[in-house]
Length: 127
Image 1 (cartoon, rainbow, N blue to C red):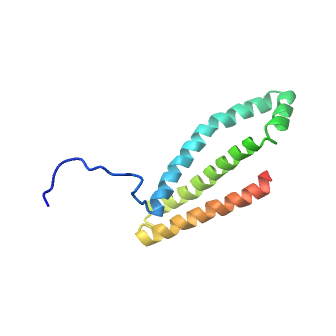
Image 2 (image 1 turned 60 degrees about the horizontal axis):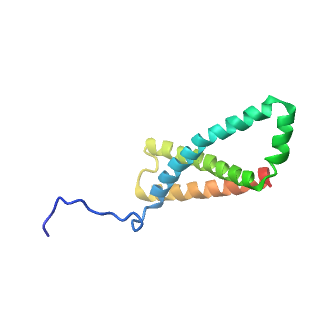
């Protein structure tokens, strides 16, 4: 075959990423979610500490709301996944688990840790 310098079309829907690549993408997404949610946390905290009436309003209207609980679950998953993935990437910086087999194993362990800790946290804190 003749090699050409034409650009190659890569269909991203048909490229299968390894689990370590999915872990890396989810680590970036969870970091973005956590960064953007800081505005929400600061706003709610400012309302909570302003006076007793606002505190009671937030406690009675926002905390029992199912949509707010769903947002908390997503933020909790983001934190847990970002935390465990950060530890995994720190280990990779020290050349621990750098080969393909151990990278796949640590990525699977990361997913299991984040899912099980999310289930435990939702059961313990939110329900």
